Length: 112
Image 1 (cartoon, rainbow, N blue to C red):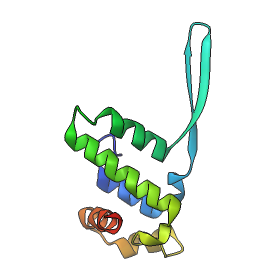
Image 2 (image 1 turned 180 degrees about the horizontal axis):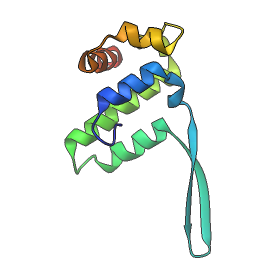
Image 3 (image 1 turned 45 degrees about the horizontal axis):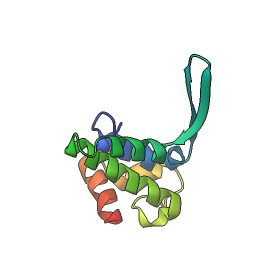
Image 4 (image 1 turned 90 degrees about the vertical axis):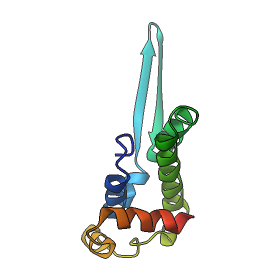
């Protein structure tokens, strides 16, 4: 979602399913006789792409930086982020409201 510039979609996904922030996926690279597999989390991806866009595309770099900060806070102290105290995804999304821009703004405000 962040790759597409949809911070609102990323916010809604993390509010509904905060465990997504901690899942890892296996990334495998191979070339000729060389093969390597590494595990990446959402934070790893956000940090990598944020660094990739640092001097190229300021708006996308900022989106990845913001995503990285939200993911870091989810990992370290989830209680600092709004809407995270409710037990279920339905309750968290209801608390967040129907306006995705306000939802995202509240999350970004909490980390600043």
